Amino acid sequence: QVQLVESGGGLVQAGGSLRLSCAASGLTFSNYAITWFRQTPGKQRELVAGITSGGDTRYPNSVKGRFTISRDNAKNTAYLQMNSLKPEDTAVYYCAARFHYSYYSNQYTYWGQGTQVTVSS
Image 1 (cartoon, helix red, strand yellow):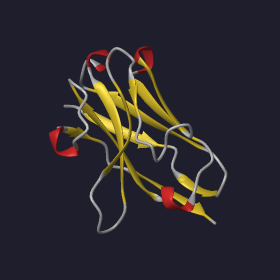
Image 2 (cartoon, rainbow, N blue to C red):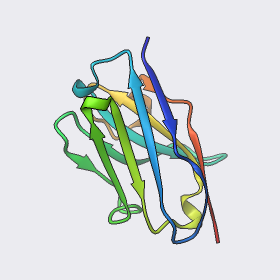
Image 3 (cartoon, rainbow, N blue to C red):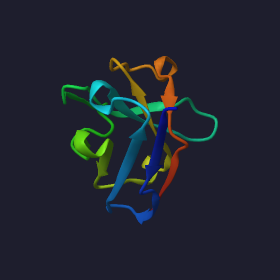
């Protein structure tokens, strides 16, 4: 079955960096768009970054210039490099896979379990 496993979360001071990984199995990784979402208690999941199967990337204004999504199809892994982190970036970060990229989290079938990112001020 399809599995997505996130790693790399943790506690970091404001201004610091983290690199999240999303390791996929059970699907032809290169055919899928991979998108990172984040969620805080009581709020809907928010799109953070997406990368299509062709390598095109998507970012909301809130993270543009600070976050970079990439993928290594040979390793079946996607990455989210997060720089200049702010306390408001604190959330559980999830990766999700879909054949075609979508902005909407409810259109994704495959999800990882999430990894906590905490940014202290």
